[in-house]
Amino acid sequence: MGGALLARAGWLPAQPGQRFATEFDPNTLEKFVDSLPVPRMATSHGSRPDPTDMMRRLAYYRIAMRQSTMQFHRDLKPATVWGFEGSVPGPTFETRSGEGILVEWANELPARHLLSIDHKIHGAEPGKPEVRAAVHMHGAKTRPESDGYPEDWIVPGKSILYHYPNQQDASTLWYHDHALGINRLNVYAGLVGMFLIRDPYEDGLNLPKGKYELPLVLFDRLFTRDGQLLYPVSGDPESPWVSEVYGNAIVANGKLFPYLEVEPRKYRLRVLNASNGRFYHLSFANKAEFHQIGTDQGLLSAPLALKSVIIAPGERVDLIVDFSQLRGERTIFESDTFVIMQFRVSPERVADDSSLPSSLRPVLRISESQAVKTRLLTLDEIDNSVGEPVRMLLNNSHWSMPITEKPVLGSTEIWSFMNPSDDSHPIHLHLVRFQLLDRRRYEPWLYRKNGEIRYLGGPMPPEPGEAGWKDTVRVDSRTITRIIVPFEGFAGRYVWHCHILEHEDNEMMRPYEIVSEREQKKM
Ligand code: C2O
Ligand code: CU
Ligand code: CU
Image 1: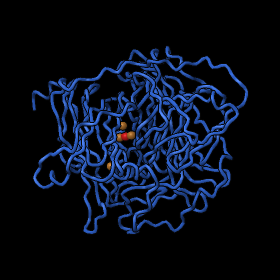
Image 2 (image 1 turned 30 degrees about the vertical axis):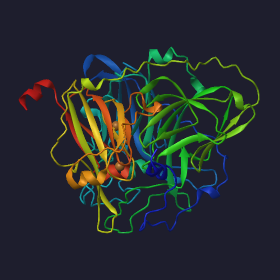
Image 3 (image 1 turned 90 degrees about the vertical axis):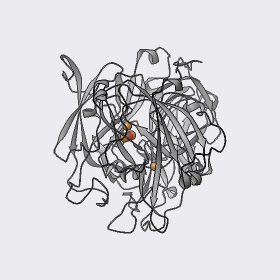
Image 4 (image 1 turned 90 degrees about the horizontal axis):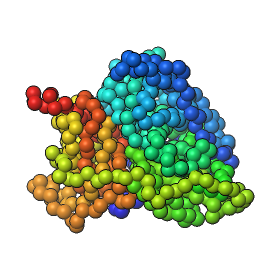
């Protein structure tokens, strides 16, 4: 693992020019006084016709984005937040593979934004409505019109009906705002939630369920002294955008330093990194071993015993933690030097009839020979004269430039991401699932000079925890990271982007278009 990644995973000092006058140190708060909240389940309200088959009806949900207040800690004043149904994280959807649902996303937010908009950023120009929201289901296979395309935002008072067919394997998905140019602010304000898809294959594994299965939505934040969310600004009121935001405390399911009382048995934790920019390096303070059973798009082929796991913004890890060896003990779940939460294991022995099977779900590796095309795509940071980043690009292209990536529906391609920077960028493609082929260190200066690719060492295979189906992948510093992608699902326009939201908002996002074979013949 590169040094840059470690630096990113840990605390990074504020960038020069960031204003932290009211920064509050949450470490002064008493720890483990609030119990870990579990977001409530989303509930459907009747049914509506299936837009793709009028003979069928689908469960219908209405979820409103609202401003509300919540207490991040017992001793903090309530903070103003934006949440789905007013809660942060929003309600968890529990759905079944093959059973589509309809969600009406309603924007009931106020007319003024909670945080400072940078009107120099594309999509957020003066004259655009200040409050806009688009909801994207991260990891879902949906038609383009239900994907939450960044330009398909809605203003307060409006709503939009999206169809999630759920024609995909059991997995841990999540939903969040995706409005062009203000996505980082809307998510920071709290617009995130979890969406689970289950299927009979997973049911048959007898994994821990019910109260023994918990979502764990993690994000870092900065707070003002009176407990409000603080989003740093550049110091230039004309362009408040900052290139990265790191909080000084980690919030778990909406609480700072919560505790959870658990029984000495197995639990399943569905962990989501919903941070704008922070990578986590999760472990238990007592170095307890746990198992990873799944990644972004579902189960791994077999459980993986670990003592720590890295999770980049946008990624998910599905974990089984067995507390049976820790009867009567307390253990802290942490990320590097950050305390996240405490588990309090009750002393009484309990029966545990759940399983941790030795094999989970076969993940057939896609052979490189199946790819009909390989694209080399660069990740670019544009700096000003004093070396501060002013913008990030993909393949040196802006959002509004013509679409250059047009894979054919049903075909498989290799996308090679070239990252000359010192930072790791988590790259996400909408609609599809993919496999990580390898990462390989190369010489960025030589490439910049004359376009020559000189590798520094051989290809590094995916880490075992990444060897399943993914939708977001770390393109580590100074590597060429290759993924293999079957473009299955629907034709139409989607996006791919860096999941560091400050990057995504400032041009590190591009549209791509899946074309049907018929359209392709016309091209
Ligand atoms: Cu999780 Cu396009 O995003
Ligand atoms: Cu997505
Ligand atoms: Cu990035």
